[in-house]
Image 1 (cartoon, one colour):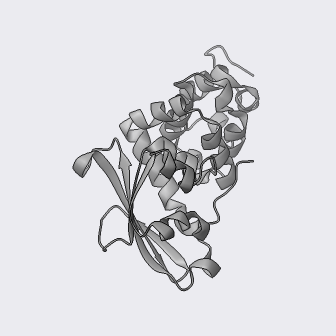
Image 2 (cartoon, rainbow, N blue to C red; image 1 turned 30 degrees about the vertical axis):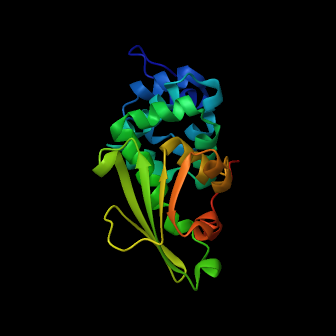
Length: 220
């Protein structure tokens, strides 16, 4: 029930869709009883980027990050992998570009994706592998205008660092929206390569099969 101050109950927030949901989340006090009663996965399920405007997907992620700054239950890490994949896969390129144009949000989304890589490695496939991959995400603020990540696949595990510590077997250069499409099964390395949207330096054969070392969640 809404009170005279315009507060909205958790059930009412969870029942909203589209811009109305975004407006409610942006007004929500993260420490209020209404916020405490909400589930971040329920909110993520209520959002369909295909029905939102160019900047609205960014608004949704911004709202979650703002809430998470005081209420960790809203953190992106709490969103189910398949649900997170669905959100990203459903977003248009314009919506993804709006997300990565926000420096803070870009870093948080990339951080979340790379942080999940260790959980998605397929140990049986990577058991006998030791390979270092350097990722260069264009449009960044690091050297040469890239955000850089190092992933080390080693004997069934995968670790991630922002430090480029080891000599890479392969270096992959890609724009964040295309990276998002790649890790949500919306594009293959081969298609991105032939269309010039991904550049690979080093072991091309290994790069072509890289995604196969991970059990990446499919959008639901």
